[in-house]
Image 1 (spheres, rainbow, N blue to C red):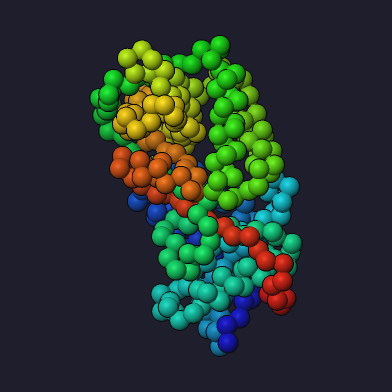
Image 2: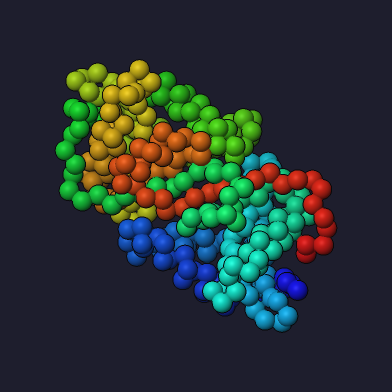
Length: 308
């Protein structure tokens, strides 16, 4: 019989968990310093998690870690770790652990449950909706401009219209992914933009760009330099609708890569919301690999009790 025993001391699990986290980040091309920063961000939250040891007939099978927290006014659960040790894989323990995690979070009032994956979802989480992917690519030498597309700093006169359009697009992306309802997504957008651009165009280490072809604006970009050591994060890169289908998407990314290199970074990463297959296909064709994938599902109200 499969049992789940809550650990009072999960320091041994944490050491193993952090080692397992480093591997996919360095494999994706992040420097040791950048990978450690990603792990450190996760480490800061581990103390709030509940970690259980999966056992069968007294033998250890693996760990599962969960937590429930407020997320923009909604209680949300997370599966932080779920690992079945190699000798026990493929024997149903993975599904038992997932079911236990779903019930545990639902009992504590969670309305949805999410998971961050650093590898393929497989059948175990195929029923969880894809909410977003973190994509990244190392940049070597500055790419040549494609299709005559260049990038220039945005002017103060252009900023208000861009800000309004960008927040609306951000909300729409979250809603399309199925991660949040519109009202919840709008609250998140307001909070995120106020935090990320407190000084508007003058916010340090941010490049808000206008993309041009033959002197005509065709899109915009927003990059945060030094987001991680040596890594620029692309908050957005948009080509105007009337200019889509002309091959400007890859050209816009090349322009962003040149700006990232000029800022001293050697890697560029983006988040793409679930449901945006066009962007995912573009990132794949440009060599941006999946570093993380976030999936979630709404929790039903009638889960059986007895998970804790």
